[in-house]
Length: 262
Image 1 (cartoon, rainbow, N blue to C red):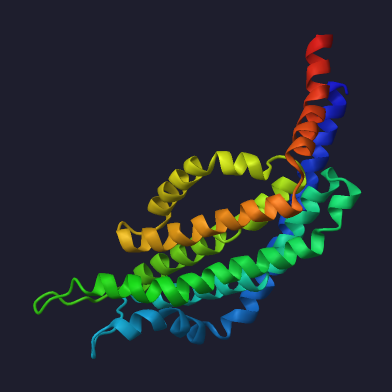
Image 2 (cartoon, rainbow, N blue to C red):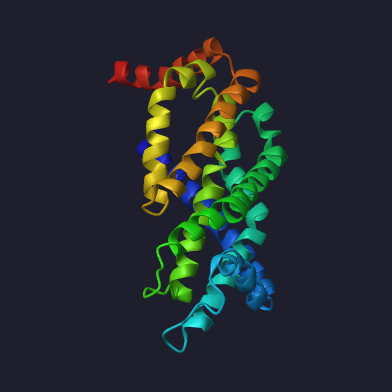
């Protein structure tokens, strides 16, 4: 392939990516418009785990006039993105699919469905399991002369960060299954690298969660379990180690031929 052809192919990929991103933005915008009418209800639902652990009479506060308006906008945008997540995941798959074999493209619908379910499942796990324990832990530092008065904007940023983190980490099985189906990894490789994976899991949990041991372990524990589930999925549904190595060798043949020709 000549330099001009490579440049044209790269430009075509960028154009395809631009179209996919525009579709995702339109879907997210439509979701935002639909959710804004319920912004107060959605925020009340988001703040419910904190309200349950606050002492009687305690409440959230906001310290400048437009703060609540912008928080309602952010809540609506987050809910709109979640509502549009099937479209977003489909666009992601549609961008990747042209580089796959025909037999691999038939996984489009299961990929989109499982990705959405895992992301929502991770967010629900964070909301229903981690939030009550985490908020109770933080509120416990209040004393007779130190009263917790959480700010609305700070709470929103904190809770959304956790929800997104748990939603993303729950995507691990589908990502590893996809990589194993195309031969990038295989279950023996994952088993061999298990100790390094566990180390990275704890490092990632420390980065993604607040600086306390409880929430770090509550993220790392499910992630380790998901990694073990991913190994099983790769073993039963992914390519065998011999097939994966053969795929890797075939992928490296054009590069080797190019080096030899030069």
